[in-house]
Amino acid sequence: MPLVPLPELLNHARANGYALGYFESWDSYSFEAVLAAAQAEQAPVIVGFGATMLADPWLDHRGIPFLGAMGRALVADCATPVAFLLNETHTLEQAQRGIDCGFTAVMIDSHRWPVAQAQEAVAALVRTAHPAGVAVEAEFGSLPDYIGESIVDAHAYMTDPAQARDFVQATDVDCLAVAVGNVHLLTSGTATIDLARLQAISDAVDVPLAIHGGTGFPPEDVAAAIAAGVAKFNVGTRLKKVFLEAVLANTGTWTGRESVHDLVGSHKESDFLEAGKSAVVSVVRDLIRLYGGQGRASSIGASNE
Ligand code: 13P
Figure: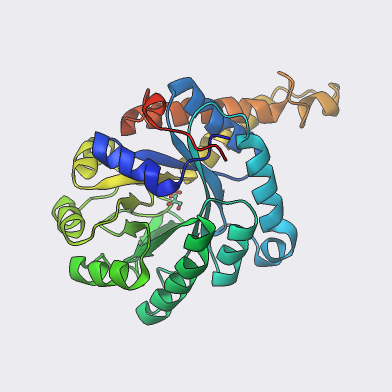
């Protein structure tokens, strides 16, 4: 199996001057698209599912075991190294369940919680995750969201380097997501990044840094961000957007006479969802190259898991 611990992938990226993409999936088509893109680029990749947009009753019932089992089945014969992340759960319990359900990295969406509460929950998660060989990411600082065509930043705050260092020391997390001007869900224009703050955080903490809000991150700042310690970019919104656009473009050709079985879920060329998948493959390949991950797979040792 090609699973490689997330810290190993992130440290390899940092040591070699590139970053990994975490390309967030929502179903088997998007997940297979990310794997296909990584294999086409011979790149290591972080695959996984985000909990933020998912309903708690579904997640708390069979959602997490279902996503874990599906992801593990799909990565089994992937030819490039992967880490498998359950991203941004609403609760500590959901992230802990992810550990038992096959994810190799977990994260709680605690950036809006009071710092003491977040620190306690993340430290508790680390205490369960590390003995199981699972990595933990946490966010310190809080990103604004882009909602309804405006940036909503009432609760957002930038990451303070000294506080970030204390948070990392107190929790023992493997990767720290930071707020340096990046915006979640930004589909119009790009964010303004405080690269000096990013460097100061990187100087203060000794774990790889992650940037959430990859959709609106300015491409021209990627190299500088990597040089300042970023080893992971999270991309979500852009993938769903291109998927939906491609599916809609294809459903427009439906006359009502074709077999619905060919068009929906057949995995044949006629499947509308395959058009969405192809669009995601193309964007993920572009982003892997932007982050410098192409051709890196062969220099990473895969585990025998
Ligand atoms: P975007 O949807 O803005 O790309 O952000 C994704 C993300 O940060 C997931 O954690």
